[in-house]
Length: 123
Image (cartoon, rainbow, N blue to C red):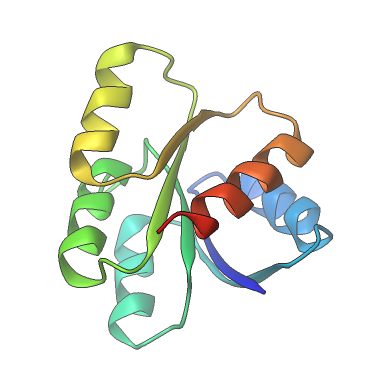
């Protein structure tokens, strides 16, 4: 079972992802956070997760900054950036920060679940 953390500042989007992904095979939503600060607090308190789904734009700690921190402190956690930014420069920054995948928010939920499984399976 893949333990997932959803980090998204928009409550409607976060709850929608939570509800839709909770029904996908082999994915368990371990926790969620409304911003990078709260995600860091949960990680510092030892929450056990395999994959983080992180929004790029958030108040406080950005998705990019959160990605960098996680890869330094908890490199075993795989990160998927979820965003509306389709510019290549954002994608490059995300991968340089340590993200395993970069996906746009207009993705179908089944495709997102497939990407979560693929990222989790990568060594």
